[in-house]
Amino acid sequence: GQQLNQSPQSMFIQEGEDVSMNCTSSSIFNTWLWYKQDPGEGPVLLIALYKAGELTSNGRLTAQFGITRKDSFLNISASIPSDVGIYFCAGHGSGGSNYKLTFGKGTLLTVNP
Amino acid sequence: EAGVVQSPRYKIIEKKQPVAFWCNPISGHNTLYWYRQNLGQGPELLIRYENEEAVDDSQLPKDRFSAERLKGVDSTLKIQPAELGDSAVYLCASSRWPIGDTGETQYFGPGTRLLVL
Image 1 (cartoon, one colour):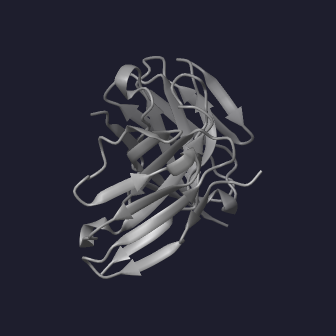
Image 2: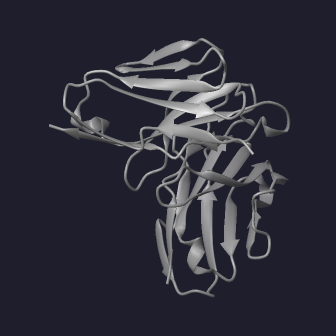
């Protein structure tokens, strides 16, 4: 089955710093998604990417769909305390797996005020 | 617009007991998903419904898990009997249509945190 490798597993940064995390897939994806999950809540969609090479921003967040279609990264600029949480990449391929999202294991982000 | 509603939010049971989780998707969303999220992991799909039909239940452990979506709206996920390894967060999500290449977004509920003792 499809596997996603997400790194780093955790990050501890100072408020104001930029942060970057990435995901690689064992197979080609047609869609890459980035979610954030706060404690006790479900994942919330941050950014969706649908085309290889696509670069999309949402406020201080920027994500890119890798040109090989097997990777994606998420950047957060000028981090603030409320950025704390677990960030998940997710994606799906084509054919029989088209409707099934595969999630990475998450990156735990801690921001020190 | 109300989000995906799940209940209960927390459940503690002893092993071998039955347990059920309920989900009310966003109004008008035809596709409903149940995920299981183990500690330190991302969500994993258990079952996907399109209206009242279960179109992908390949990851559902059918010996003890069952699900239904009568009338194509609310859904219930049941475990009987529960085992220690079933302790996890059970997430429900919905979308208007299957995500596919349509650009549809899945919206997640807050989840039910199950602890089996």
